[in-house]
Image (tube, rainbow, N blue to C red):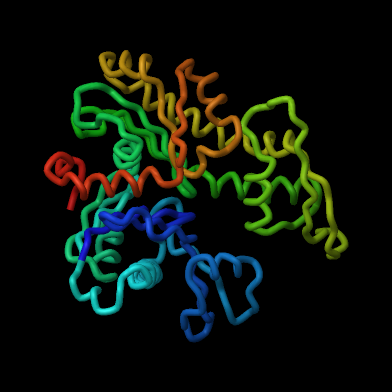
Amino acid sequence: MSDIAIDLGTANTLIQVRGEGIVLNEPSVVALDRTTRQLRAIGHEAKRMLGRTPDNTVAIRPLRDGVIADVDLAELMLRHFLQSILPKGLFRKRPRVVVGVPSGITEIERRAVRSATMAAGAKEAWLISEPMAAAIGVGLPVTTPRGNMVVNVGGGTTEIGVIALSGIVADASIRIAGDELDAAIVAFARKAHNLLIGEATAEALKIQIGSAVADGEDRWMHVKGRDLVSGIPKTIEIHADELREAFQESLQAIVGAVRRALEVTPPELASDIVDEGIVMTGGGARLRGLDVLLSRETGLPIHIDEEPLTCVVRGAGFVLEDWSLYRGVVTD
């Protein structure tokens, strides 16, 4: 059986099989029967149930803030995803697996990821920090003495790493990322418009009209929700500048984390970063104008990968392809 790379993300789980490329990209959501705990759906089907389930069904994210919140559910989800990509009968040949994890997780959280991966069918489970995996995924020379800086904005965490000689020299990890922006939109709609909206609606607003800086375009969107005063469903119009205001606190926290990482970067590596700039990866990097905001706040050039969502799993895949070169970047 081929080796497998996994980006076990708060929002999405991506799996790459060595020699075959990315074979799975599904939301990290599980739907269960509330009383029997029997599985109803996993992935795309379960995500469609978020905020729409009857009383006896609950849609749960097994990962919160980049780490496993429910080990049993995470194992169930991983096992389901792995079995869905493997031909029947081949699962007995247990694969070697490399999993991308946030750099700021605790030893207990690392054990939870490792045990869930092993229980799901891995022969060996190796962990790689997300900034390192993302840097390898975008093709940065992480094994050389030259300094490279990566900002990986995911669903649950923003990971910043300054990388040289196969190690992370300076880093910062905050549990503020895409999910936090969604929560800010929900809170804004409630406070400013007395409108209760769901997670899926907030995410759609962020993707379609959200931006980090003003760009001269007046984007807006009709939003449906429940009026908190009358209790009756209604439709309102929300503009991009309103969302930008709602995002400010979260975006400033991300900028602050990047600044902190830069402040503790050794001078020689800092000079490399001035030349090379910062690479942004992760699904959150697709927020309009986030690169402009970071560039404005740091004075450094910002580069966004063409496929920022897949950088971590691609990097974990490269590790499996050249184990002798990258052995030093993973931990067991």
